Image 1 (spheres, rainbow, N blue to C red):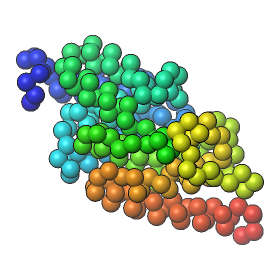
Image 2 (image 1 turned 120 degrees about the vertical axis):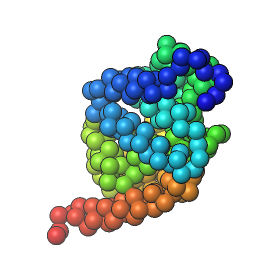
Image 3 (image 1 turned 180 degrees about the vertical axis):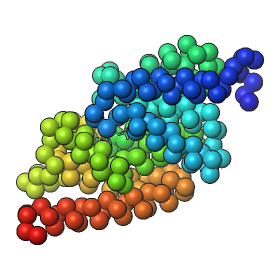
Length: 223
Ligand code: ADP
Ligand code: NI
């Protein structure tokens, strides 16, 4: 263990309290940011960290806290991590760990063509885990749940997807949920940082392509 930790510091109890904090924060969310999302990102991040040799405590805490300051949830500026920082400080986490986790949180988001790869292995692992939960069967479900929560059309052939949006254009975009597949979800496989996540992404990506083929075939009500 890192020598910055106080002697009575209990890793297990910090993780348990972080799980409880995340559970409370996402209690009543219907935009795809429910606690089940955070739980899956945490599990996936642990698996990827194990395979890639990343630091487990940093990865798991960052995964559990990665969305507690999400602008869609709490307003405020994208990339700020006030709630996560306050929580960790109140639980006596060392400053070096707090800084590291806040950096990971600020680097995790998708921002169209302004997206950057995180600087540390731990950040890469958390970003991969978060992105894996946006694709595949659960990702499809989350996308339509999010679209519904914003009263967006499932599909609108009159308004095709906009490719190559920068961060600002991406965050203001109000297109259909099917557009979101072309604007983000189908791009994620090739943006995975780690080999472990890329393998999981391959299968999920194929499943989304199949889903879209079937969706288009059914759309006009002809069969
Ligand atoms: P994450 O929690 O993975 O960082 P976001 O905060 O960007 O992802 O979005 C949460 C969920 O909502 C994801 O599953 C994402 O695909 C979905 N989502 C975000 N924007 C849209 C959109 N414009 N249309 C449909 N789904 C969206
Ligand atoms: Ni997330």
